[in-house]
Length: 294
Image 1 (spheres, one colour):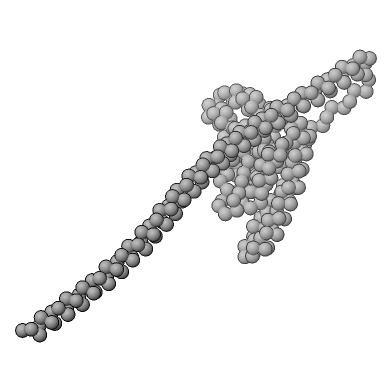
Image 2 (cartoon, rainbow, N blue to C red; image 1 turned 90 degrees about the horizontal axis):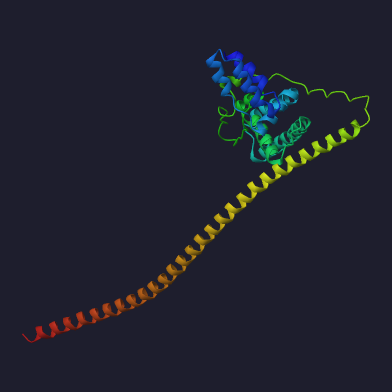
């Protein structure tokens, strides 16, 4: 079943993002005679937008992705023994490569009608970076079966187990696909169809604009929530700082008072010590005088 499931997953994850769920459910329904296969198909998760973009890039521009992964493997070997300056140069070069390939991925997504926001592009670039610095991440990207983006710290190994659709994805290579050829334009225009065509184009443009507004509104709400949370955190921290300053001022005042009391106590101790010495001397003198009278 593994090979069949991999082949089916390869087809599903090559689909446009909005077709994934209905096609997956249709495939599961068609396999109703095999309960195990049905359950495995239904368990296939819809990819995030960033994961879908990377999967698209792998299938539509496999040669470029392989070059990126090959460069990443070479850089992983080369960075051993490098000093800090050389590593900074290496990091900058790696960033330039991933940024350029991310731009290509955004262009491919746009051809498919998907507008990639900057936040999604950042996830795509982070995934490509992870594939360059980590061998398992490279295998996950090459599979074309990503369900979420990847990140790499550069220190710990990347955990790819939850980022791919199937455990067998590692070691699997996605099948390349080509862009769908658009239908040829109508050569004969019936009177009245031109106006309908223009109206349809305007409606499509409006729908795209409304979708962009909805997406932008979602990002705006997310950023507003982040700002509000950080503002609340900032106020909390400032309050804690003010409280610590108050406690510090009180402690400094207590310390000053203690220092004054210590000085007075030391002075009294000195005076008591001098009095004790004088009393001992007088006693010894008295004892000496008494001894002469015997």
